[in-house]
Image (cartoon, rainbow, N blue to C red; front, side, top):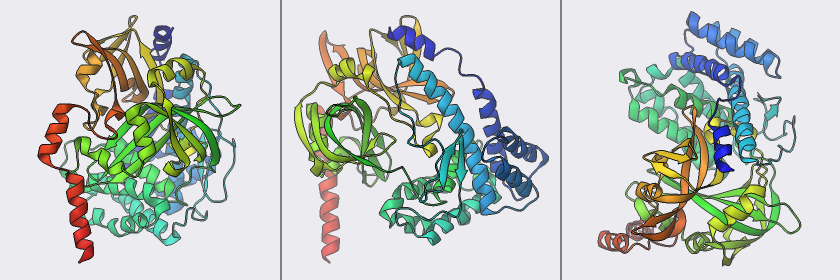
Length: 482
């Protein structure tokens, strides 16, 4: 029963998690202070990080890095080793938490293609829970080595200075390399990550005046950026897959300059076990495009958007699937299938579907987002109560571009959502609900407005405000014609 599974999940955490996080916190504190002059407490934190991973493939490199940085010699290879050690600790925590979640849900999971392989194009390998970094690896995806080197230089300057020393000049030092990354299609993920870090630092500058510095968040971004900057982004070798994609729900991420729709579903292949997959489509935007208007940016994905809005399956043919469970979406390799209710899919398919392995550099607790079906509960504010077991609802993630609201969640009795880990606790992010409104049953999904809003009030408000996307496109076209 799900209430029993939930009880297993929200109980005491896996052994060693708090100790590992304490080591990470020590490193984050040292990074926040900067490595220009390493104080005694920060030196001890670096030594503790190296000591904890002494038996891993990173052991010797970490010991050398901690010693050199403490002595004032901050080289790229030393920072790469320290970032790898931090990532390895988070990877171990991620694995322990995910194993706990899989056990509670009774979910099987595939393993990463190779337990100890350093790909010639990546420079990163997962070995016994550690992430080993090869700074000399060739660039992947056509990212020029000088651009990656520029990223490492900027991130090194941040590490030497420390967050409290960041000012506009230091932040601006990364603008040129971020612009160069954005020009290379294969590096845009790294570019967006570094651009986001730069934007947060610029908005907070001078950081010395801040009451509270988001040390953990900025260290997360710095670590991932530095590791990806060793040899360029890498996610494994894709395999072509064909079959029927049954959609479970859509997770919409909205930012001032970009919007991403991540669709979770179950892939049925002929003669194979059903497996959990996800696919993402993203679009650049300006901050005036908000709310339901963001869906207009995905007009080039009619099959996927139509399937979301109409609750249909999708027949895919030769779609690339990465080892981490991500479909690289090609609308021309997909066609809309028959009607397929996501709640029926969840009830019939979710329990037996195999979950994908997690790519080495994605092994971080905050990246856990597992689709689940929860039924027969009550909601009290932000808390879901299922048979006496309680799980906090992550209502802050409900996007403004979708019809799903906290009021609908509060009135619901069934929910398709993502189980997440954040702030040391498990959370449930709703993607779709079945609720009772004015004594009538309703079903609402995040993706219901993928081809346009269906609520008459929203349609009227959009009509009054005008089509922002169409206006901006017309103006851009006019400028290009000049």
